[in-house]
Image (tube, rainbow, N blue to C red; front, side, top):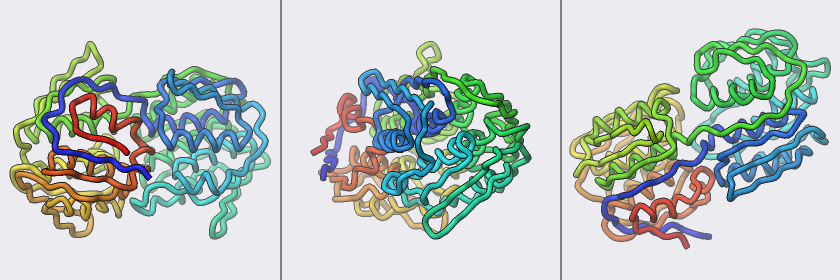
Length: 420
Protein backbone atom coordinates (compact mmCIF):
# COMPACT_ATOMS: atom_id res chain seq x y z
CA UNK A 1 0.00 0.00 0.00
CA UNK A 2 1.26 3.46 -0.91
CA UNK A 3 2.72 5.83 1.65
CA UNK A 4 3.58 9.53 1.64
CA UNK A 5 7.24 10.47 2.18
CA UNK A 6 7.94 14.02 3.37
CA UNK A 7 11.27 15.76 3.74
CA UNK A 8 11.88 19.05 5.50
CA UNK A 9 11.05 21.66 2.89
CA UNK A 10 11.63 25.35 2.52
CA UNK A 11 8.81 27.89 2.54
CA UNK A 12 5.88 26.90 0.33
CA UNK A 13 5.57 29.40 -2.50
CA UNK A 14 3.31 29.78 -5.49
CA UNK A 15 -0.33 29.32 -6.43
CA UNK A 16 -2.76 26.54 -5.55
CA UNK A 17 -6.32 26.13 -6.81
CA UNK A 18 -8.90 24.72 -4.43
CA UNK A 19 -11.32 22.04 -5.62
CA UNK A 20 -15.05 21.81 -5.04
CA UNK A 21 -16.02 20.98 -1.48
CA UNK A 22 -16.18 17.33 -0.51
CA UNK A 23 -18.71 18.10 2.23
CA UNK A 24 -20.95 19.83 -0.30
CA UNK A 25 -20.48 17.34 -3.15
CA UNK A 26 -21.63 14.30 -1.17
CA UNK A 27 -25.08 15.64 -0.13
CA UNK A 28 -25.60 17.18 -3.58
CA UNK A 29 -24.96 13.80 -5.21
CA UNK A 30 -27.39 12.18 -2.75
CA UNK A 31 -29.97 14.89 -3.48
CA UNK A 32 -29.89 14.04 -7.18
CA UNK A 33 -31.96 10.95 -6.24
CA UNK A 34 -34.91 13.33 -5.83
CA UNK A 35 -34.82 14.48 -9.46
CA UNK A 36 -36.94 13.10 -12.27
CA UNK A 37 -34.57 14.58 -14.87
CA UNK A 38 -30.81 14.65 -15.44
CA UNK A 39 -28.74 16.51 -12.86
CA UNK A 40 -25.35 18.04 -13.75
CA UNK A 41 -22.81 18.87 -11.04
CA UNK A 42 -19.72 20.95 -11.82
CA UNK A 43 -16.37 21.19 -10.01
CA UNK A 44 -16.76 17.74 -8.47
CA UNK A 45 -13.55 16.78 -6.60
CA UNK A 46 -11.83 13.52 -7.59
CA UNK A 47 -12.00 11.82 -4.19
CA UNK A 48 -12.43 8.31 -2.86
CA UNK A 49 -15.59 9.39 -1.00
CA UNK A 50 -17.10 10.75 -4.21
CA UNK A 51 -16.41 7.40 -5.88
CA UNK A 52 -18.21 5.58 -3.06
CA UNK A 53 -21.37 7.67 -3.10
CA UNK A 54 -21.57 7.46 -6.90
CA UNK A 55 -21.36 3.67 -6.56
CA UNK A 56 -24.18 3.85 -4.02
CA UNK A 57 -26.35 5.71 -6.54
CA UNK A 58 -25.55 3.23 -9.30
CA UNK A 59 -26.53 0.37 -7.00
CA UNK A 60 -29.93 2.05 -6.56
CA UNK A 61 -30.49 2.36 -10.32
CA UNK A 62 -29.11 5.81 -11.15
CA UNK A 63 -27.12 6.26 -14.34
CA UNK A 64 -23.86 8.06 -13.60
CA UNK A 65 -21.43 9.68 -16.04
CA UNK A 66 -18.30 11.02 -14.29
CA UNK A 67 -15.78 13.02 -16.33
CA UNK A 68 -12.80 13.46 -14.01
CA UNK A 69 -10.85 15.73 -16.34
CA UNK A 70 -13.71 18.20 -16.57
CA UNK A 71 -14.76 17.55 -12.94
CA UNK A 72 -18.30 16.99 -14.22
CA UNK A 73 -20.90 14.46 -13.07
CA UNK A 74 -24.19 13.76 -14.82
CA UNK A 75 -26.75 11.75 -12.86
CA UNK A 76 -30.03 10.33 -14.14
CA UNK A 77 -32.18 8.97 -11.30
CA UNK A 78 -35.47 8.73 -13.17
CA UNK A 79 -35.65 4.94 -12.93
CA UNK A 80 -34.60 3.84 -9.47
CA UNK A 81 -34.72 0.08 -8.97
CA UNK A 82 -33.85 -0.30 -5.28
CA UNK A 83 -34.31 1.34 -1.90
CA UNK A 84 -31.71 -0.88 -0.22
CA UNK A 85 -28.13 0.40 -0.03
CA UNK A 86 -25.40 -2.30 0.01
CA UNK A 87 -23.52 -2.85 3.26
CA UNK A 88 -20.11 -2.99 1.55
CA UNK A 89 -20.59 0.61 0.34
CA UNK A 90 -22.30 2.02 3.45
CA UNK A 91 -19.51 0.69 5.67
CA UNK A 92 -16.91 2.78 3.83
CA UNK A 93 -18.31 6.24 4.42
CA UNK A 94 -20.66 7.96 6.82
CA UNK A 95 -22.04 10.40 4.25
CA UNK A 96 -23.57 7.50 2.35
CA UNK A 97 -26.34 7.63 4.96
CA UNK A 98 -27.52 10.83 3.24
CA UNK A 99 -29.31 8.76 0.59
CA UNK A 100 -31.89 7.74 3.21
CA UNK A 101 -33.82 11.03 3.16
CA UNK A 102 -34.10 11.24 -0.64
CA UNK A 103 -35.10 7.56 -0.96
CA UNK A 104 -37.73 7.89 1.75
CA UNK A 105 -39.19 10.96 0.04
CA UNK A 106 -39.02 9.56 -3.48
CA UNK A 107 -39.95 5.89 -2.94
CA UNK A 108 -41.66 5.93 0.45
CA UNK A 109 -39.28 3.24 1.69
CA UNK A 110 -35.58 2.96 2.46
CA UNK A 111 -33.39 0.33 4.06
CA UNK A 112 -29.77 0.86 4.90
CA UNK A 113 -26.91 -0.10 7.20
CA UNK A 114 -24.98 1.71 9.89
CA UNK A 115 -22.60 4.11 8.10
CA UNK A 116 -18.81 4.01 8.29
CA UNK A 117 -16.14 6.72 7.89
CA UNK A 118 -13.45 8.17 10.15
CA UNK A 119 -13.37 6.92 13.75
CA UNK A 120 -13.47 10.40 15.26
CA UNK A 121 -16.49 9.96 17.51
CA UNK A 122 -19.93 8.45 17.87
CA UNK A 123 -21.71 10.83 15.46
CA UNK A 124 -25.07 9.18 16.23
CA UNK A 125 -27.77 9.07 13.58
CA UNK A 126 -30.59 9.51 16.07
CA UNK A 127 -31.20 13.10 14.95
CA UNK A 128 -31.70 11.93 11.37
CA UNK A 129 -34.24 9.34 12.51
CA UNK A 130 -35.94 11.82 14.84
CA UNK A 131 -36.50 14.09 11.85
CA UNK A 132 -37.92 11.28 9.72
CA UNK A 133 -40.29 10.29 12.53
CA UNK A 134 -41.48 13.88 12.84
CA UNK A 135 -42.37 13.75 9.15
CA UNK A 136 -44.47 10.63 9.70
CA UNK A 137 -42.06 7.84 8.86
CA UNK A 138 -42.05 4.54 10.70
CA UNK A 139 -38.51 3.55 11.73
CA UNK A 140 -37.40 -0.07 12.10
CA UNK A 141 -33.98 -0.72 13.65
CA UNK A 142 -31.90 -3.72 14.62
CA UNK A 143 -28.19 -4.17 15.33
CA UNK A 144 -27.05 -3.39 11.79
CA UNK A 145 -30.00 -2.53 9.53
CA UNK A 146 -32.14 0.59 9.67
CA UNK A 147 -35.34 0.92 7.71
CA UNK A 148 -37.90 3.69 7.25
CA UNK A 149 -41.34 3.56 5.67
CA UNK A 150 -43.84 6.21 4.66
CA UNK A 151 -46.16 4.40 2.23
CA UNK A 152 -48.63 7.28 2.19
CA UNK A 153 -45.92 9.88 1.85
CA UNK A 154 -44.20 12.19 4.32
CA UNK A 155 -46.05 15.07 5.97
CA UNK A 156 -44.43 18.36 6.92
CA UNK A 157 -44.08 19.22 10.60
CA UNK A 158 -41.81 20.93 13.13
CA UNK A 159 -38.40 19.29 13.62
CA UNK A 160 -36.23 20.51 16.49
CA UNK A 161 -32.62 19.32 16.47
CA UNK A 162 -31.01 18.88 19.89
CA UNK A 163 -27.68 19.68 18.23
CA UNK A 164 -27.18 21.56 14.94
CA UNK A 165 -26.05 18.44 13.08
CA UNK A 166 -24.99 19.11 9.49
CA UNK A 167 -25.88 15.62 8.25
CA UNK A 168 -29.27 15.56 10.00
CA UNK A 169 -30.15 19.00 8.69
CA UNK A 170 -29.29 17.91 5.14
CA UNK A 171 -31.13 14.59 5.35
CA UNK A 172 -34.28 16.19 6.77
CA UNK A 173 -34.17 19.00 4.18
CA UNK A 174 -34.06 16.46 1.37
CA UNK A 175 -36.85 14.33 2.83
CA UNK A 176 -39.05 17.40 3.44
CA UNK A 177 -38.59 18.69 -0.11
CA UNK A 178 -41.25 16.22 -1.35
CA UNK A 179 -43.35 16.05 1.84
CA UNK A 180 -46.94 17.21 1.96
CA UNK A 181 -47.23 20.64 3.58
CA UNK A 182 -44.59 22.68 5.36
CA UNK A 183 -41.62 21.59 7.46
CA UNK A 184 -39.73 23.84 9.86
CA UNK A 185 -36.29 22.73 11.05
CA UNK A 186 -35.29 24.56 14.24
CA UNK A 187 -31.72 24.69 15.57
CA UNK A 188 -30.58 23.76 12.07
CA UNK A 189 -26.90 23.69 11.09
CA UNK A 190 -25.71 26.90 9.41
CA UNK A 191 -22.71 25.61 7.43
CA UNK A 192 -22.10 26.88 3.88
CA UNK A 193 -22.67 23.32 2.66
CA UNK A 194 -26.27 23.58 3.96
CA UNK A 195 -26.79 26.74 1.90
CA UNK A 196 -25.28 25.07 -1.18
CA UNK A 197 -27.65 22.11 -0.84
CA UNK A 198 -30.66 24.41 -0.45
CA UNK A 199 -29.63 26.40 -3.53
CA UNK A 200 -29.30 23.19 -5.53
CA UNK A 201 -32.66 21.82 -4.39
CA UNK A 202 -34.32 25.14 -5.19
CA UNK A 203 -32.87 24.95 -8.71
CA UNK A 204 -34.55 21.55 -8.98
CA UNK A 205 -37.89 23.09 -8.03
CA UNK A 206 -37.90 22.85 -4.22
CA UNK A 207 -39.14 25.66 -1.98
CA UNK A 208 -36.58 26.11 0.80
CA UNK A 209 -35.94 29.32 2.72
CA UNK A 210 -33.73 30.23 5.65
CA UNK A 211 -30.73 28.01 4.87
CA UNK A 212 -27.70 29.45 6.64
CA UNK A 213 -29.82 30.40 9.68
CA UNK A 214 -31.04 28.28 12.59
CA UNK A 215 -34.58 28.09 11.13
CA UNK A 216 -35.11 26.46 7.74
CA UNK A 217 -38.59 26.39 6.22
CA UNK A 218 -39.40 23.86 3.50
CA UNK A 219 -42.68 23.83 1.57
CA UNK A 220 -43.09 20.42 0.00
CA UNK A 221 -43.58 20.14 -3.75
CA UNK A 222 -44.97 17.31 -5.87
CA UNK A 223 -41.76 16.55 -7.76
CA UNK A 224 -38.29 17.86 -8.51
CA UNK A 225 -36.77 18.17 -11.98
CA UNK A 226 -33.16 18.43 -13.19
CA UNK A 227 -30.63 21.22 -12.65
CA UNK A 228 -27.02 22.25 -13.30
CA UNK A 229 -25.05 23.40 -10.28
CA UNK A 230 -21.45 24.34 -9.47
CA UNK A 231 -20.22 23.07 -6.11
CA UNK A 232 -18.81 25.65 -3.70
CA UNK A 233 -15.04 25.67 -3.00
CA UNK A 234 -13.72 23.40 -0.26
CA UNK A 235 -13.11 25.56 2.81
CA UNK A 236 -11.26 22.74 4.59
CA UNK A 237 -8.84 22.18 1.72
CA UNK A 238 -8.31 25.95 1.56
CA UNK A 239 -7.65 26.02 5.31
CA UNK A 240 -5.12 23.19 4.98
CA UNK A 241 -3.06 25.04 2.37
CA UNK A 242 -3.33 28.29 4.32
CA UNK A 243 -1.92 26.51 7.38
CA UNK A 244 0.71 24.94 5.10
CA UNK A 245 1.88 28.43 4.15
CA UNK A 246 1.88 29.42 7.81
CA UNK A 247 3.82 26.43 9.15
CA UNK A 248 6.58 26.76 6.52
CA UNK A 249 6.82 30.56 6.62
CA UNK A 250 5.74 30.54 3.00
CA UNK A 251 3.98 32.85 0.56
CA UNK A 252 1.04 31.13 -1.14
CA UNK A 253 -1.89 32.38 -3.20
CA UNK A 254 -4.89 30.17 -2.43
CA UNK A 255 -7.28 30.44 -5.38
CA UNK A 256 -11.01 29.60 -5.62
CA UNK A 257 -12.09 30.49 -2.09
CA UNK A 258 -15.10 32.19 -0.55
CA UNK A 259 -13.52 34.26 2.20
CA UNK A 260 -16.72 34.53 4.25
CA UNK A 261 -16.60 30.73 4.67
CA UNK A 262 -13.13 30.75 6.26
CA UNK A 263 -13.25 33.81 8.53
CA UNK A 264 -12.27 31.82 11.66
CA UNK A 265 -9.18 30.44 9.87
CA UNK A 266 -8.19 33.90 8.67
CA UNK A 267 -8.62 35.35 12.17
CA UNK A 268 -6.60 32.65 13.93
CA UNK A 269 -3.79 32.68 11.37
CA UNK A 270 -3.51 36.44 11.78
CA UNK A 271 -3.28 35.92 15.55
CA UNK A 272 -0.50 33.41 14.86
CA UNK A 273 1.48 36.07 12.96
CA UNK A 274 0.43 35.49 9.35
CA UNK A 275 -0.17 38.28 6.89
CA UNK A 276 -3.29 37.57 4.84
CA UNK A 277 -4.25 39.63 1.81
CA UNK A 278 -7.77 39.16 0.43
CA UNK A 279 -7.71 39.36 -3.38
CA UNK A 280 -11.43 39.85 -3.92
CA UNK A 281 -11.17 40.39 -7.67
CA UNK A 282 -9.65 36.90 -7.96
CA UNK A 283 -11.64 34.99 -5.31
CA UNK A 284 -8.25 34.31 -3.76
CA UNK A 285 -6.16 34.85 -0.63
CA UNK A 286 -2.44 35.44 -0.29
CA UNK A 287 -1.04 33.92 2.89
CA UNK A 288 2.41 34.98 4.08
CA UNK A 289 3.64 32.93 7.01
CA UNK A 290 5.77 34.23 9.91
CA UNK A 291 9.32 33.10 10.69
CA UNK A 292 7.81 31.30 13.66
CA UNK A 293 4.11 31.24 14.53
CA UNK A 294 2.85 32.74 17.77
CA UNK A 295 1.05 30.38 20.14
CA UNK A 296 -2.69 30.77 19.55
CA UNK A 297 -5.52 28.88 21.20
CA UNK A 298 -8.61 27.63 19.37
CA UNK A 299 -11.97 26.13 20.35
CA UNK A 300 -13.87 24.17 17.72
CA UNK A 301 -17.56 24.98 17.31
CA UNK A 302 -20.34 24.50 14.75
CA UNK A 303 -20.28 27.08 11.96
CA UNK A 304 -19.57 29.98 12.07
CA UNK A 305 -17.10 28.95 14.78
CA UNK A 306 -13.67 27.44 14.21
CA UNK A 307 -14.19 24.23 12.17
CA UNK A 308 -13.38 20.88 13.71
CA UNK A 309 -12.12 19.74 10.29
CA UNK A 310 -9.21 22.20 10.57
CA UNK A 311 -8.34 21.45 14.19
CA UNK A 312 -5.64 18.83 13.56
CA UNK A 313 -3.88 21.00 10.99
CA UNK A 314 -3.82 23.97 13.38
CA UNK A 315 -2.46 21.75 16.13
CA UNK A 316 0.40 20.81 13.81
CA UNK A 317 1.11 24.53 13.38
CA UNK A 318 1.10 25.07 17.14
CA UNK A 319 3.68 22.33 17.74
CA UNK A 320 6.39 24.68 16.44
CA UNK A 321 4.89 27.88 17.84
CA UNK A 322 6.52 30.32 20.23
CA UNK A 323 4.65 29.72 23.48
CA UNK A 324 1.85 27.53 24.79
CA UNK A 325 -1.52 26.97 23.11
CA UNK A 326 -4.75 25.27 24.12
CA UNK A 327 -6.80 23.32 21.57
CA UNK A 328 -10.35 22.60 22.75
CA UNK A 329 -12.45 20.15 20.72
CA UNK A 330 -16.18 20.49 21.38
CA UNK A 331 -17.68 18.84 18.28
CA UNK A 332 -16.29 15.26 18.38
CA UNK A 333 -15.19 13.40 21.49
CA UNK A 334 -12.45 11.35 19.81
CA UNK A 335 -10.64 13.79 17.56
CA UNK A 336 -7.25 13.87 19.25
CA UNK A 337 -5.91 10.60 17.80
CA UNK A 338 -3.30 12.60 15.87
CA UNK A 339 -1.74 13.69 19.19
CA UNK A 340 0.11 10.38 19.60
CA UNK A 341 1.36 10.58 16.02
CA UNK A 342 2.59 14.18 16.38
CA UNK A 343 4.25 13.17 19.64
CA UNK A 344 6.31 10.60 17.70
CA UNK A 345 7.73 13.60 15.83
CA UNK A 346 8.78 15.28 19.08
CA UNK A 347 5.69 17.44 19.65
CA UNK A 348 4.94 18.29 23.29
CA UNK A 349 1.20 17.81 23.72
CA UNK A 350 -0.79 16.83 26.81
CA UNK A 351 -4.47 15.97 26.58
CA UNK A 352 -7.14 16.11 29.25
CA UNK A 353 -10.59 15.19 28.04
CA UNK A 354 -11.48 17.49 25.18
CA UNK A 355 -8.50 19.80 25.74
CA UNK A 356 -4.99 19.55 24.39
CA UNK A 357 -2.17 21.70 25.77
CA UNK A 358 0.54 22.30 23.18
CA UNK A 359 3.97 23.56 24.18
CA UNK A 360 5.68 24.92 21.10
CA UNK A 361 9.22 23.81 20.28
CA UNK A 362 11.62 25.13 17.61
CA UNK A 363 11.55 22.04 15.41
CA UNK A 364 10.12 18.54 15.00
CA UNK A 365 11.88 15.41 13.78
CA UNK A 366 10.81 12.91 11.16
CA UNK A 367 9.11 9.66 12.13
CA UNK A 368 6.94 6.83 10.84
CA UNK A 369 3.35 7.87 11.55
CA UNK A 370 -0.19 6.84 10.59
CA UNK A 371 -3.05 8.92 9.29
CA UNK A 372 -5.58 8.00 11.97
CA UNK A 373 -8.30 9.89 10.11
CA UNK A 374 -8.71 12.20 7.13
CA UNK A 375 -7.74 15.55 8.67
CA UNK A 376 -5.13 13.98 10.96
CA UNK A 377 -3.41 12.70 7.82
CA UNK A 378 -3.20 16.22 6.41
CA UNK A 379 -1.84 17.50 9.73
CA UNK A 380 0.95 14.92 9.73
CA UNK A 381 1.93 15.86 6.18
CA UNK A 382 2.12 19.53 7.21
CA UNK A 383 4.22 18.63 10.25
CA UNK A 384 6.53 16.62 8.01
CA UNK A 385 7.26 19.72 5.92
CA UNK A 386 9.05 21.34 8.90
CA UNK A 387 10.47 18.23 10.61
CA UNK A 388 14.18 17.40 10.44
CA UNK A 389 14.76 14.26 8.39
CA UNK A 390 12.08 12.15 6.74
CA UNK A 391 8.48 11.62 7.78
CA UNK A 392 6.64 8.57 6.42
CA UNK A 393 2.84 8.72 6.57
CA UNK A 394 0.99 5.41 6.37
CA UNK A 395 -2.75 4.62 6.01
CA UNK A 396 -3.06 7.42 3.47
CA UNK A 397 -6.36 6.08 2.13
CA UNK A 398 -7.87 8.41 4.73
CA UNK A 399 -6.23 11.38 2.99
CA UNK A 400 -7.53 10.22 -0.39
CA UNK A 401 -11.06 10.44 0.97
CA UNK A 402 -10.88 14.22 1.26
CA UNK A 403 -7.96 15.64 -0.75
CA UNK A 404 -7.58 15.42 -4.51
CA UNK A 405 -3.84 15.13 -5.34
CA UNK A 406 -2.56 16.62 -2.08
CA UNK A 407 0.96 15.47 -2.89
CA UNK A 408 0.95 16.97 -6.40
CA UNK A 409 -0.36 20.31 -5.19
CA UNK A 410 2.26 20.51 -2.46
CA UNK A 411 5.01 19.55 -4.92
CA UNK A 412 3.92 22.46 -7.15
CA UNK A 413 4.47 24.77 -4.16
CA UNK A 414 8.02 23.47 -3.68
CA UNK A 415 7.44 20.80 -1.04
CA UNK A 416 9.80 17.83 -0.88
CA UNK A 417 7.14 15.19 -0.88
CA UNK A 418 6.46 11.96 -2.74
CA UNK A 419 3.97 9.17 -2.84
CA UNK A 420 5.00 5.63 -3.55
